[in-house]
Length: 121
Image 1 (spheres, rainbow, N blue to C red):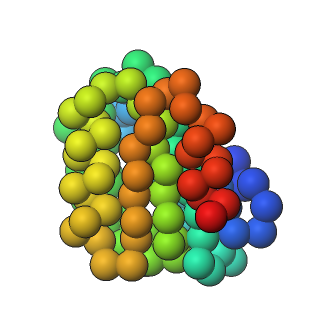
Image 2: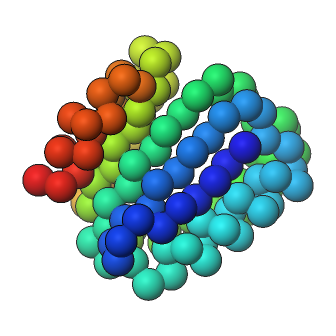
């Protein structure tokens, strides 16, 4: 499951769980691109539960949309990632270090209040 929920004028919340196949990835990316079209200097709260790697087909869909995804990422200044897996936390923060203009901070899944406060600061 990949669900994008607008949360105010410059924020989206994303919920990800399970494994995405190519059809789900196609729909998820369309939803993400659509819901972020008018965002500038945005904030993102990313909740990840029961993560499984996407199928090869889903990864192919994501790679085919990479230019659009980079434009979406460029609309955001901060992203908070709520997840209980340490390797995903580290990968998220490394991704933030590699993306100019985007600061990513990872939190334990039960630290939503802290993540909200960090996004608002």
